[in-house]
Length: 318
Image (cartoon, rainbow, N blue to C red; front, side, top):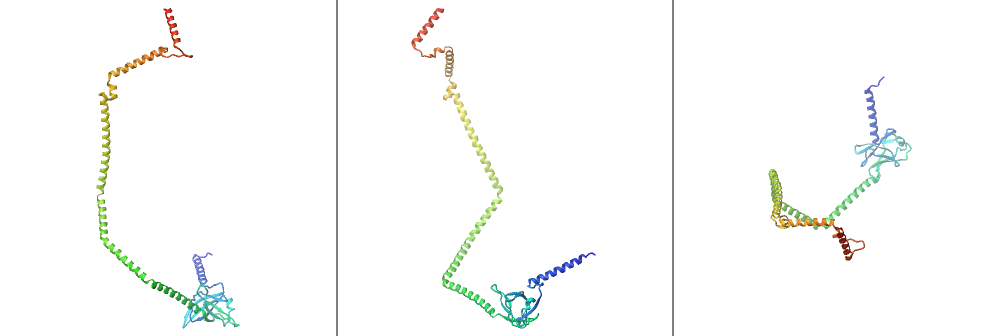
């Protein structure tokens, strides 16, 4: 037999509701896993007490506050106390409302009576406010008020001792503010005019962008033409100087011109070259006429004797 899907969803929803309810009760200080009973107490004033405030017995937490309601001129407080601790509370015990500690807040402390019978569930426990609770609150409020009073008195004393300098400082600030306002008002017209002129100038630039670009283009073209003209001028000057030099050479002016145009000088140089060639040829043919070499040296007499022998040989051969 199949379990329908709707039945599964219903079971899941019930489980979620139960778990949520248990969580809410647990957050409120009620543990559903423990058996507890309800008890009541009445007070004139429960300032500082809240739902879920702790209920203690000899410093041990035995329960918490469940509800706080007004009933006539009294405040009814409903407490939930675990049964295992309820058996330790005699019927003539007192639920004393006191401070929770240094961290502040209010809690209920059960003061055990000397009776023999335990208090029955849903019974009312005598409620009492701890005598020093109101005193503590009043003391804290008084201390706070005293501190505020001291602070106010110190401020008043400081202002009283420095009243004149503070007044003078305020007057100086007011005068400075007035001066600044006057300066700003006086400069407002000039500032507006300057901003207007600047706006007009920028608008003019925007309107004449094409003209400005054309002017820059013309300037660039002019500089290029000027550079090219200077180059052409320098080239023309160099060519003219070269032509002048060639003309001077052709006319026989200068050293180069004289060398190129003097025929007598050319003939002399040509004759000198021929003579030099003959001299070199003779030197090659008759080196002894020009170079004398002897391993042991030579003298004039040896040369003369040698010449005589050569002459005699030549005569005999004839």
